[in-house]
Length: 396
Ligand SMILES: Cc1ncc(COP(=O)(O)O)c(C=O)c1O
Image (cartoon, rainbow, N blue to C red; front, side, top):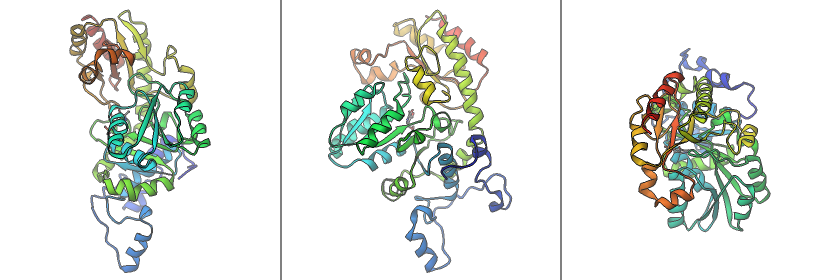
C-alpha cells in the first residue's frame, strides 16, 4: 500500500474500488455478515495461519471495512489501517499496545479530555502506568520529561481547543534515538493536511466521527501505521477488547470518503475567511487558529501542515457568563453541541463543561478564559454564517 501511485482525489474516488469484482456495481456492496464459510479443512486452516490478511470473522476483518482501511492507509502514506468502533476505541487500543505495567508515557497538556482520562486515570489506577504532561510547543520539555521507563510519547497536534502544535519531525527523531514509540491523534488535520507517518511518527489515531465521516451520522475511529504493529494489535487489543467497526458504518464512511477532499478544502477556505473576519472584529479579543498569521506557531504550522479544516476558537470581549450565554443562545445557524467536522456549523463554549470539572483558577492556569468560544465552520454560505455571528455579538 505504501508508495501508491495515485493522488488524494483518485485514492478517494477510484483506487482499489474494483467494480469488476462486484458484478459491476459502482458502489461496492455492503458485506453485512458476521462470519465467513470455507470450502474445506485446508482453506480454513490456511486462513488461521494468517488471520491478519484473512476473512474469518467480522470482529477481525470484514471486506467492507477492509476497503475503507486500505483507502485510509493510502491517504496517510502508511502500510495499513484498522477501523474501530470509535476514536476512543483506536486511542485506547493503540496506547495499550505500546505500554506495559510499570511503564511511563510522555504526553501533552491539552490532549482530548477522554484520552487524558484514559492515560492519567485508567492506566495509572489499573496498570500502574505513570505519565508526564508537558507543554509540547517546546521539544526541550518533551526531552526533559523522558525517563528510563518511557515507552510512549503520545501527541495531539494541533490540539482541538487552542491548537498548540508539536514539531513532529523533532519528536520522531528524539523518540527513535531512544527506542520510544510515538502515537499522534491527527483528527484535527486528517491525513489530507498532515502526514505524521511520513515525518517518522509510528502511529496515527483518529476520530473518524469528524472529517472522514463528515455527515455527523457515524461514530468511528481508525489506527494507521505499520503492518507489523497493526497485525499485532489486530489479534490482541483489537480482537480482545472488541471495539470493532460495524460494516454498515464502514460503508457510510466509504460514501463520505468520496467527497472528503472537496469538503476539507471547503472547510479550510471557510475557516480561513472566518478567522480573518473574527480577527478584525471589535468584540473579539483574540483568535486561535493555526492557519492565521497571528497564531504563535504559524511558521511550524505552515511547515508541517498543508491545510487547517473547520475548527477555530475566539475570545469574546466579556467575562460575564450571562452575556456569554446570550451570545451562544442567540446563534441560529451555529448549532450548540460537541464534536465537529460535519457539514453543519457548530458552536461550543468550553466554560460549560470545564466549570463542572475544574475550579476557576485551574481554568486560568490553562489560559482558558470564560469567553472562549469554539466553532466548527460548516459548509453553509459564509455570509450567512457571519451575519449569524454578527447578530450574536449584539448581545455582549
Ligand atoms: C481530538 C479528538 N480525538 C479523539 C476523539 C474521540 O473520538 P470518538 O468520539 O469518535 O470516540 C475526539 C472526539 O471528539 C476528538 O475531538
